[in-house]
Image 1 (cartoon, rainbow, N blue to C red):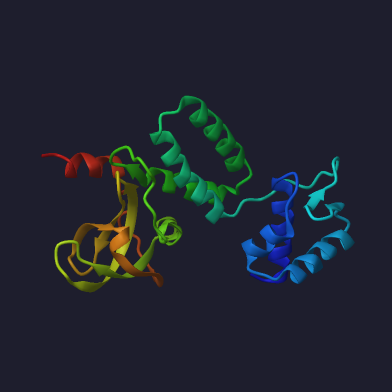
Image 2: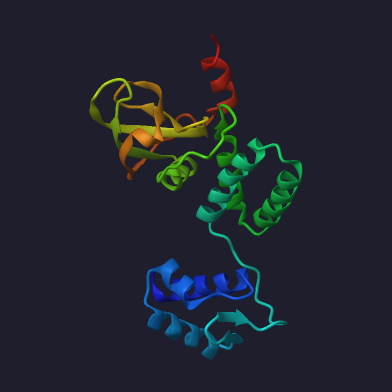
Length: 229
């Protein structure tokens, strides 16, 4: 992250809490405390009224108003996925409040971003309610690949065989079960739609190859077809 982006992100962090410690800023951006001091000074010299409490932290002086924060598409993607998890908990007040907040966030997105968000919303599902959301490091890459129709390259550990294979896949959707995140994709190796457990993916990266088929992929229809037993 370059200095300008970091300073902007620090300003956003200062807006998020009543008081923010230099240590928490340093840990978030993996920088030294000395660098935090310099960045805070840069913001102050730019006219942002940042106060401090000795031994406590920094704060933005009451009454100061900043322009509306613009969300990146990646940040909005993360919130859309989080919404699916919230909805599965069936806690009405939490659902209502989260949905209301998300509407406000969507309202500041560009039209092109809104289209991609709507696509992503239709491509995230839940096979059953979860107890604890499963862990993964790959959702951000998968989200981007789905909304931009980018082929993914992966190394995948077979669930049933002690075998590591290299795959190129066209990512279409993902969902979570009680224990796992699952990617639904067209596998170029198997020449068919396949499901991949994210915890079995050893490496995952975006390629420079785009795909144009499967634009009409429907997750609900897919579930109805594959869950028929």
